[in-house]
Each structure stands twice: as C-alpha cells, then as structure tokens.
Amino acid sequence: MSAEWPVFVINMADNTARMQKCRAALDAQDIAFERFEAVNGRALEAAEIARIYDAAANRARFRHPLVAGELGCYLSHVALWRKLVASDAAGAVLLEDDFAAAPGLGLVLQALAGDQGNWDMVKLFSRRPDARMLARRPLCDGFDLAIPYQIPNTTLGYAIRRDAAARLLQRALPIARPIDEDHKRFWEHGLTIALVQPPPLSFGEEASKGDTIQANRKAATRPPAGAVLRQGLRNLGYRLRYLAALHYHRLIGTGRGHAP
Image (cartoon, rainbow, N blue to C red; front, side, top):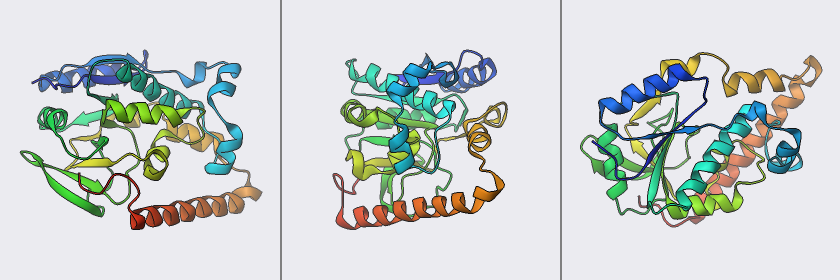
C-alpha cells in the first residue's frame, strides 16, 4: 500500500539501526518512502548558528537556550517544508526515525491524502490520546480525526499540506523555540492542527538509546544549585503564559475553525 503523498523519514547517517527499523516497519505495510538526511546540529558552524538562531528571542520566548540537537531537528523539518513547497505534491508525510508504526498506518496516510477536511497539519502521535478534543469525526476504519484543545508535543510524525508548509516557512527562521513548541502556538501561524486517534505512531525502542535531544537539553541547561529556584519560577511563568494564551485563543476561535 502506498500513500498518495510522499513520505519522508528524517534520519542521521550514523543512526543505521533506527533506519533499518523504519524501513522494516514501512515495508511491512507497503508504504513507499524516501530517507531524508537530517541536519546535524552539532556540525553547524558558529556563523550558521548566528544566522538561524535568535538568542535574544529565545530568552524572551522560551525557558532555556536551545541545544544543537533542537536546532538540527528544526532545520531538518524546514528543509522538508521547502522541498514540499517546491514540488507538485499537495502534501507530504514527515516521520522522525524513532517511531514505531501501528498496523493501520498505511490506511491512515491514504485517508489523509484524500481527505478534504478543514485542517493544515495532522499529527500522528500524542502522549495524551485521551486529552480534550474540540471536534472529532471518522477518518478511516479504526481511526478518527480530531481537533485537540491543546496541540501535543513532539514531531514524531505528521502530515502537512503544501500551503501550510509555505506558511510555516514564513515564520520558521530565525529559530527561537523548539519546533513542537512553535506548533503548539497555533494562533501565531494561523494553522488548524488535527490529530489521528488512536495514534498510528508510537515511540520505538531505538528512541531510548544513545544521545537524545531531551538528555542533551537537560545536561546543557542544568542550572547551578543557587539558580534552581529561579529556573523553576521561570518554567512556571512560561507555562502559565502559554496556558493563558491557549485559553484565550480557543475562546475567541483563532484559526480557521474547529471542524477537522
């Protein structure tokens, strides 16, 4: 079974074990895909980091400085948005290489490619599939399409329409927050983001092996003992500001409507 939209798997050259698992999972469902070389954030030169990363905006808009892996992750997605916008495809599916696929993934991807609903991006994974939904309807056998009240974290996998990728590109650089934190703020980019339920993706075994962005972030941003309280208060303030903005924009209906 082949999705009508191109499917890309973002993968670092040295993560061969992950790629093998991705290939096996997608081949098992006859899902055609293209491996996409991930941007290695650790290999970025200082001049390039200065060009694509706004440290001042980061201090104002996020909890802590971004680590190399977060920059590389964001740039990988930006590169694929550009590839999609330059193509004739109506949309694409982007997968990070630490996923595990449910048996119905191929059906979901085909259904999304042919769906005419009011959405710009559909996330294929959520850590909280039982979270509050604003609207919900059947997508294909065994799966629904829903609009979550709060956009889930992670960019493990999602489908995106070409015009939505073009709109995200307008605000993508310079980077100030992780990519999933930007997606959560739908009022900034004006996109309707939906979610497949139950999620057809989960994290694979390889996701817990080796250096991860989260582990590197914790190591890079661990404050000294005297700054722990200040960092905690900063995190709390960030969370409260986000929730206040979320509730306000859901209340006024920012975006193109709630129907998926």
